[in-house]
Amino acid sequence: MGRSKSSQLSPRTDLKLFGGRIPPELAKAIRILSVTKEISVQDLMIEALSDVLIKHGEKLPKKR
Picture 1 (cartoon, rainbow, N blue to C red):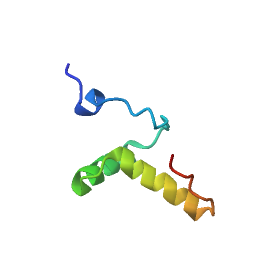
Picture 2: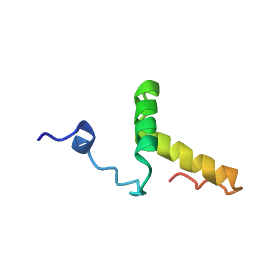
Picture 3: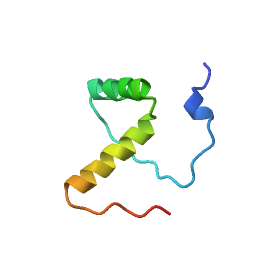
Picture 4: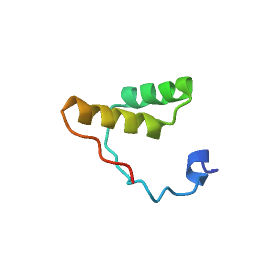
């Protein structure tokens, strides 16, 4: 089996691994949106988590 393109990219040492279990239907919808909008799943997840912080009145952390 070959490696996927994403596993061949160099590691991002400025990012922290963060994950969770989600329903398969939601994972599929996010992957489809990623392809449709040409945005990585990682960038969509960062956007979603940022939106949750804002929704709950939290400040976004400053970028390093």
